[in-house]
Structures are given as structure tokens and as C-alpha cells.
Amino acid sequence: MSGNKAAIRGWTRTQSRLGRQAARPVVAFGLLSCLLGVGQAWCVASVLGHALVGLVSGAGANALALWPVFTFAVLAFIRALIMALSDTAAAKAGIDARRRLRGEVLASILTGGPALLRKTHSGELANIAVDRVEALDGFFARWVPASVLWYMAPILILLPVGFIQPYAALVLGLCGASVPFGQALFGIGAAMASRNQFLAMTRLQARFLDRVKGIATIVLAGRADDETQRLGQAADELRQRTMKVLRVAFLSSASIDCAMVIALVLIAIMDGRQAMALLSGGASPALTYTLTSGLFVLLVIPEFFAPLRGLALAYQDRAHAQGAATAILDLPEAQQRPSPEGARTVSASGIMISLEDVCFTWDPARGPALDHVSFTVPAGETLILAGPSGSGKSTIMELLLGFIQPDSGSVRLNGAPLESIVPDSLSRMVSWIGQRPVLFAGTLKDNILFARTDADEADLLAAVKAAAVDQFLPSLPDGLETRIGEGGFGLSGGQAQRIAIARAYLKNAPILLLDEPTAHLDPATEKSVFESLQRLALRRTVVLATHSAAVHMFNGRRVDLQAGHVAARQGAA
Ligand code: ADP
Ligand code: MG
Image (cartoon, rainbow, N blue to C red; front, side, top):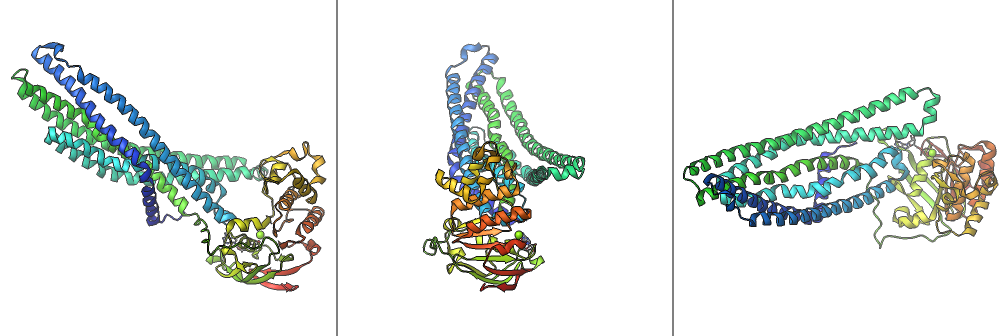
């Protein structure tokens, strides 16, 4: 994770700006509720003030007026209503923002494509798209409104207090102003603790996913106990970091309590003195006013500190957002769609592929993966990319799929640079089959229809036949409706690959990219899969990466790659 601080701060600022618009109703409701709170405090103070004076003068409860009680009840009702509205508005702001961000993150992940998986664990990607975006809810629903309310609401309260008791307003103002210093002190710790907690969580998730996938390897190697222990350690690390986050949060809320108690004591002492001085004179309007206003100020103190407490609570949300920003900023930029003038589509059939002097480097420390590679595949012909493992075959495939762009040189389809082609139209033109097909948990039929959900029964059956899926259907309990597990669990490698071929038949795209499609198959199965592929390759432009000896079954041009450059050519490639 590259924790570029300036970039993270920039990201947080942009998100705050975007969030503030949606937070406006929440802020307005917050201020209104604060004013109502002040009104309620006055009602309570005036009831208590009158009662106290009544007690002192012996006049009893008949001095009690009913209007403050009634007003209090009305204000409380309105306040509850406003709180509900405010919560709804905050939840909506959070939901909208999460939807927007999840769209952005998914776009980035899709742009990165398989190239992204070469450096980031799939568990981490899932964590970013789900948990981290989810954790941003508090940032928009709580932090953004709190970051405005924390100073506006106390100022709003200081106005009536200053009017009634300037000294109390001064004390409150000073105590309130000291809070941000305490917060700054603990807040920094909170942000760091929360970022570490996120890292620990991501690590635990990635590790767990990895080990679940490799469960057979672990058990056979007799490492089950070891691995359980390691997972336990990772979980324990997460626990410790979580406790630290809680500890820091506790300290920061204690600093607010401290300021509040100081303000309360100072103001109570002052009010008490004033009341004592007047008390000797018996009941008087001056005494009633002093008691009422003194009680009012004391009652309003928690109201004054509430927005500050809200900010402290929401600080955790901001820290979470920064943790999420680190991960989100590490994703590649979502692909910019070419501007409408520059965008092009290429005719849907008869496509010529050409690479012109293409260079590409994954990691400068490891040298170029492709070094001035050029070749042409005329429309409807097949090019065989041969070469040992690591020679750059898959890199060429990813260039052709548009997941990565060449450092220099160009990839063209019918002469049009690949990056100028509308992404949707590119993905419609290309079928890709890799070493292991990606099959999802579901029925066989759903898995085939994945390529074209609107295909009718006749198309489906034609694809099933052409890919020779029908050869092994009788051995399955429910035929096409048989449920298979994630990754094609329950099927053999050859059977799974046939499903991928059936998908390609359904999609019927003019370009076919095959990246070592038979790498994991035994020679007999390989031969029959190659036969199906030969049929599929008819009338399409094909690039077939393989180092299989059976490749002579395909006639076409051939390019031999060696450590990223073209070592030999056969045919007119
Ligand atoms: P092939 O498919 O022919 O086996 P690849 O195209 O997968 O070869 O890899 C070509 C070279 O690029 C290899 O040396 C490989 O180590 C390197 N490479 C591939 N992906 C990355 C990556 N994400 N980071 C660094 N190097 C990479
Ligand atoms: Mg490869």
C-alpha cells in the first residue's frame, strides 16, 4: 500500500465536498434541533426556578405555571420528529455516496482486469469493493454533517447564553475552544490506529481466502495445524488493533467530558454565589430571574457539548475513510471512455490484428516483458504464439483484451488503434479462453448462457453440440440443469474447458484469443479439445498461445517468443 499522504488528503477533501451537498438537510435539521433543545432547557429552568422560589418563600406549588410544561412537551415532540427526518437524510446521503463509490471502485477493478490480480490478492479487492466502501457510510452520514455542526451549533447556543449571562458564555466559549486541541492530540492516534486495524483485517481476509482455496494442498502437506495457528495469530492481531482503536476513542471522549465538567463547575459556582446574595432578600422577581437563568445555562451545557462529542465520534469515520482511500487510490484509474468524436467501432466481421513495435514493462526492476514485438494476423487466420513459460504470451493477450496499454508501439484492429475503440464494442468482438475456465456456482446451462443471456434454446443446443458438451451430458445427473460448484467443481478439466468453448460459440465473436487452453489436459483430452477449438476457429481471427506439441493441428502463421522478443517466425507473420 502506497500511503501517499497528500493524495489521501486530496481524496478526502474531494469526497467531503461531494458529500456536503447531500449533508445540507442533515445540518439544517441539526441546527433546528439544537434551537429546540435551548427552548426546552428554558422551559425546564423556568419550572424549576419558580418551584425553588416558591419553596423559599413558602408560597408552595401554586406559583407553578403550566405553560412551560406544555411548551416543553410540544418542543420535545417536534424535536423527535426532526431527529427522525435528520437520520433519514443522513442514511440517504450515506447510501448515495456508497453507491457512487462502489461504481467507481468496480470500474477501476474491471479496467485493471486480470493484470490487477497479478499484484493484488482477490481477497483484498473484494475487501475494497465491499467492506471499505461500506465503512465509508459513516464518513458521509456522520462525519460530513458533524464537521459543519460542531462549530455552528455551539455558536448558535452561545448567542442566547451571552445575552443572559455574558460571563457564562465566556466560560463555555473557552472550554469549548479547548476541545479541538484535545481532539487533535488523540485524533491523530485514532486515524493511525484505525488504518492499522484495516490493514490487519484485509490481511486476515486475504489469508483466509487463500487457505480455503488451497485446502487440499495444506492438508496433504500436513500443515493444517500450522495454518490454523497462523490464522489464529492474524485474528489476534486484528483483535489487538481493534482494542487500540477503542482505547483511543475512549480517551478522546474523556477529554470532552473533562472540558464539560470544568465549565459546569465554574458556572455553578458563579450562579450559586449570585443566588445566595439575593436569597437573604426573600422571594423577588430578581431572585426568580437569577435562579431561572442560572438553571437554564447549566441545563444548556450538555447541549453545547453534544455537537463536539458528535464530531469526536465521527472522527473515527473520517479515519476509516482515510484507510479506505489508501486502498482505493492504489487501484488503477477507471478507463476513460474515448470522446464521442474519437470513438470508433470496427466492422463486426473480418478483423485483422496487428502489433506494431510493442514494448511493455510490468516492473522496471525485472526488465521489459515485451521488447519491440510486431506481427500481423489477417482476418480469418490463426496465429500461433509459441514460447516457454514467462516469454510474454499472456502479456500479449492482456494487451489485446485492452486491460493494459503498451508503453510504446501500438495494437491495432483493422488499422484502428485499440484504445480508440469503444470498450463495449471491443468486448463484443472478442472471445477469450484461458488455461482454466471461470465457472460460477450454478447450473451448467446458466454457465453457458453467461456469454449471451438472451440466447434461445436452439442457439444453446447448437453451442452445446459444437463444443461437444453433449458427449458428457449423459453422465451428469440432471443434464444441462446439473448444478456445479464454484470453479467448475464436479467437472473434469476437459469438461470445464468445453463449457468455455460453448460460451465462445454462443458469443460468436470475430476474434478468438486462446491462452494455453489445453495446458492442464492430458494428451487424449487435449486432442479432442483442440478439435473443438479448430471448429470454433473457422472464419475467426485467432491468436493461440501454447507450447503444446499438438499445435500442428492448427495451420497458420507462427511467432516464437523468447524472453519478450520475437525469436523466429513461420508463415508470413
Ligand atoms: P507467459 O504467459 O508467456 O508465461 P507472461 O506474459 O505471463 O508469460 O509473463 C511475461 C513476463 O512478465 C514474465 O517474466 C513475468 O514474470 C512478468 N510479469 C507478468 N506479470 C507481472 C507483474 N504483475 N509484475 C511483474 N512482472 C510480471
Ligand atoms: Mg501465460
